[in-house]
Image 1 (cartoon, rainbow, N blue to C red):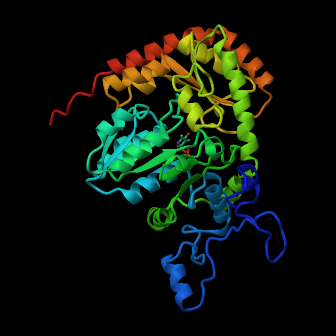
Image 2 (image 1 turned 90 degrees about the horizontal axis):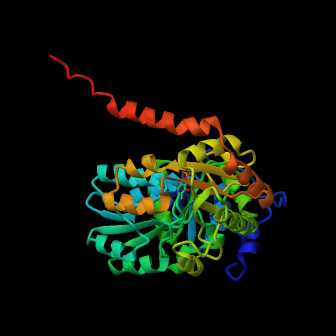
Image 3 (image 1 turned 45 degrees about the vertical axis):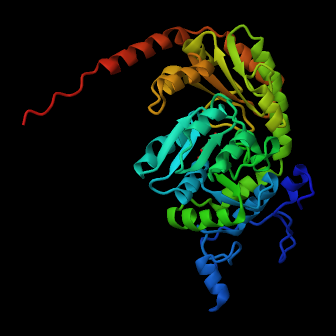
Length: 430
Ligand SMILES: *Cc1c(COP(=O)(O)O)cnc(C)c1O
């Protein structure tokens, strides 16, 4: 099927009519276990997961509903094999805990999804794995951080929440020079806008909760990469650590993939129009959108992405107060975490919480991060609604002046001062 376009693969890859009933829609197999083959080589294959498509034995290891999703994702990313897991974080941790051991070293982006940053900053060092967090948009910083122990270079591009990009092709070359692998979290682009494996990356991970599913109704994660490596992650991370995807979620996400190319085209078209609108809006200080010429890495975006995607980051002239007012006034765009859904969502990151207090960043890294985030940044996930309605909603909310918006920042500052002045409890006398 490799000669087919993504539009066609999204619908047909991994699917065939049910041999028993002729049903065209893949079945949802809600079974935790499977009848085992009789005594013989097939039984051993099933129980030891000896081969990549061993007979099904237990749903945590592999199941037919996930296999449809895995085949579709391998086809869409142009990879040999894929593995579906319970969430995006399950995908990232599965890679880390399969390929790393005490004494190894990871170079990773200093700006990425908060859960990934904490996995890298807290849990890996606790297991004796060293981690260097650097600005991966600067390939020289990555090169300088490599050691003979470096096994993984990990980047997110575009990076959550600021849309900073990393050059996948250049980083793959640098990682491979010392025998490390490059892992790319491509959640924000989806395979329709960016194909990291074609640019030299070894593994792609996705939070399938976002664009792959697209409807905001299921958590999931996917890893795509070489057959042998994916099989190893399945045998180690799924069998030993758990984190399997439920059949129902696999069914929903595979179903969502059929419309992924259409959705990504619409998300990108709408986001470009909205990013341009925001750039001209009097309440907006600065907009970061890879599809805008003003994005600091617009050239790289044009080289490695086929469109700008659905995620926009922007600074407000009115800072926190404007964000508080906006949260009360958006009617269509919902103030909520997550992204990549049909429904538009937005979230505000105050710099003092997300940058100044970040435990893993050096002062120089905080300064570089602040360049993008200002006093705080809005992350807007542009959904599939009519962009005219979205712009009207944004315009009304951006112009809103509310009492809460005026008082909120004062109350927030007071609360922070109270917290920092709280004295630690007196030590026990005895
Ligand atoms: C949401 C997100 C994740 C985590 O995915 P979950 O499915 O919530 O575990 C990882 N990376 C990126 C870029 C994300 O946006």
